[in-house]
Length: 303
Image (cartoon, rainbow, N blue to C red; front, side, top):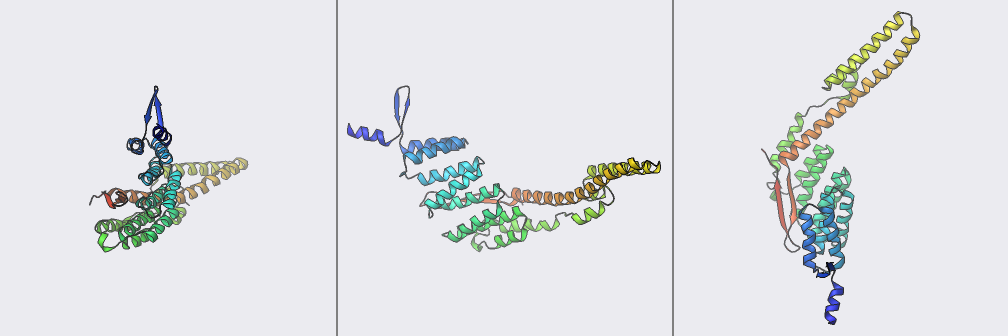
């Protein structure tokens, strides 16, 4: 009788229609996993947290903490994911799940466009990595972060640091071949766009924004002609007002042409980066249990 009372005190009990259901660590963890696999990440987080609270000594606690961070990441709550991953790293710094948490933290930073913090996190992983395979994964991810920043040479430097034993695994020969295509990216010079915009619409035409070029030419042309007609008919007040308005449109035309050049270059970079992700990116993450390190690899290749 005493043993039964102690058991009830130690384990959570759920009551349904007057019936008590005793939940053990495995059943609670599998319940959380059920929500995670279904993609109901916020419910999964609650159940993982419940598992950690009631069973702090269970063998799956590290995995549960990692799953919390991963669920936040998949649920696009990136700041919470970073906090969850960092907590796991602090508590279990030498575990496999801590290594995976570095990678998860980096991905969350990238999603937040906090690229410098992602790079610092990966550099920390390189420092603590217990073997070359992990270091190579960190170098590979660093390269992709630099690609996000548009720093092609820095990215190539990171890829070059990957050891010879893993270069084929990351398909670096093909990736660097694709990366070399950046030399063929179109580029618009903002200064040239601004100079051409002295003729309304010419700057936009240079940036291949044909509708904007036509609108700019017609609006500025119409205002210039109207101001000329006003002065020609000795209506200086009206001519002055129209000229003042036209100066605003004219300067806006030059500013817009320069901005269009920057936008064109930015869009070209994003299109090329999207092409690389679709045709040349390999995702490798560490899986397996604490004592059994394994690599899970997924490829997106089209050469």
